[in-house]
Length: 125
Image 1: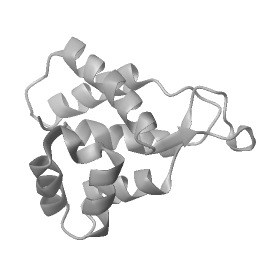
Image 2: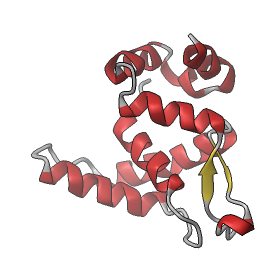
Image 3: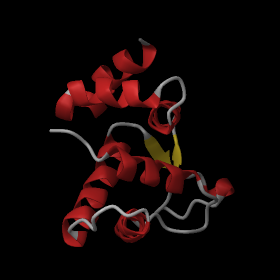
């Protein structure tokens, strides 16, 4: 199993945005698909992409990559901020220090890549 790192990157960037708005992964999947199509890439199955985005939201939260946004930062109980772990993942996916190599290292770990223990080992290496 490999992750859709571009979609994951999109979700992490959306979590960084200012508060007061709910985090809506299915909408971000739609926007991601439109951007892909505009870039000349084939349009993915939207239902699958939306489900994947919804699953990634849970994965990011449960893995400690995002945490509930505090009220004083615009938190409404339905939005997030990046944790330190999430910030490291964001930088890895954006390409800081050879993003392709980071994505390949993550892919080599398969579905376990985003478990806290495995990711923290990769991120510190």
